Amino acid sequence: GESVGLHLPTLSVQEGDNSIINCAYSNSASDYFIWYKQESGKGPQFIIDIRSNMDKRQGQRVTVLLNKTVKHLSLQIAATQPGDSAVYFCAEIVGRGSGNTGKLIFGQGTTLQVKP
Amino acid sequence: NAGVTQTPKFRILKIGQSMTLQCTQDMNHNYMYWYRQDPGMGLKLIYYSVGAGITDKGEVPNGYNVSRSTTEDFPLRLELAAPSQTSVYFCASSYNRQATVSGNTIYFGEGSWLTVV
Image 1 (cartoon, rainbow over the protein chains, first blue to last red):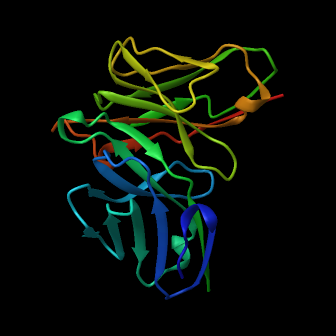
Image 2: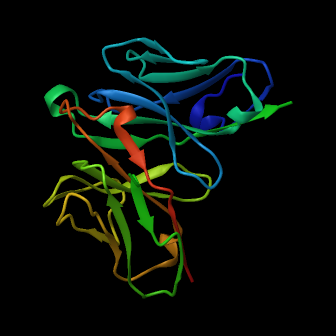
């Protein structure tokens, strides 16, 4: 399954399928792009990040892709599990290199629902 | 090591009342942040601080004030509470050993649920 961020706030996938969550960012000067997972009643939980000089980064069952040309970020979750059900937010840290402000700005978020 | 601690966890305020949300971290982090999250929405940055004595406005600072007199504490004050300030508030902090804040250096508190009636 695949979402397009703001326009499809809920993504429903079958357990075991791969999920793709998308995000459009606005600030071309951002240094880091981050994906967070937020479960109901809890704070954001770091999943993976990618620096602006990279196109792809892989973690455990997750891959983040960065397309700077179109200012697009995506999170791919392999073999989606019921425990992956949550809201997923993209975020960016404004400023690059010595200009890294540490200012963390969040995107809108996508709800991932995993059907057993 | 307690991490980022927010108090109170829940609070109900009447319109026009004032209150302070407390945030403290014991990790000697330079950077601290306050966010609000309305139901079904993302987190909006209210204020942030890059060190003691320095604060900057975020995306939605109106109606709030902050101070950073110590490295550990970053309180958020609501002077005249309004129903529009009903939200969940998250405090976060980050270290920058390499002068760069990255994704895995930012730690969040558990949130403070505020209702203004």
